[in-house]
Image (cartoon, rainbow, N blue to C red; front, side, top):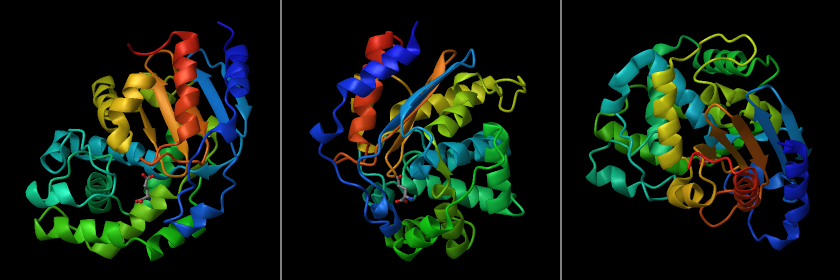
Length: 304
Ligand code: GLU
């Protein structure tokens, strides 16, 4: 299959000016990003690389990082984590508080903010230096020592993190948060501030397409049965209250972030990342979704 010509046709077919969408501005630092950026990178299991547009520019991966924190916590606590966070789609916005109240402080899944904050709490309990240890883990699975946090974005989010702070307080009242709230919030905003290019993101997520092995060295970092479960959670919960729509249109497990990035994987075939900061009303990249829909349609490669 000529993947590069398929990507070129996607780039030509999508006119970014046809798409409405707002750059996330509740984190002031994110509002500064040029809304017309658009790039995509496809990384195939045979180590092929295909790309277009702004695919080599770093952006804030935001919630995409929740998958990476989850896999680390899953390694540390194994199935005990499912006592503190469920695996059901939420159908509510990512930062909603309502379900938590009537579900006794147990978040619906680890990819909404409440669930991701519980995962941060678990990491803070286990890691000596949570920020440094998490970063080292990401550098290892991406095979890229240059991946880093964006301090400005982290600080900007922390100043405006009232909802996340509220989620933590509510869950603490139910006994589902063990550590100091400030410490968890600080780790969480750093985790979300990781920056990557589409190429780096697709390389990092190759782990999920390659049964938990690093492509190239073939080192088994995560057992396949745990990768299988995380992929299932990405499929059902990876796109806020639009997970059904993403599954319907694209047909791949994936995760989005309010920085406008989307990563998706086709197990045993490829991982792919798209970036465009214009978000639809549900908080997903409108253009990123359209590009990925075209990719699975044109390649006839979706998990369905
Ligand atoms: N750090 C962001 C927040 O908590 C992440 C949101 C997202 O990307 O969905 O609001």
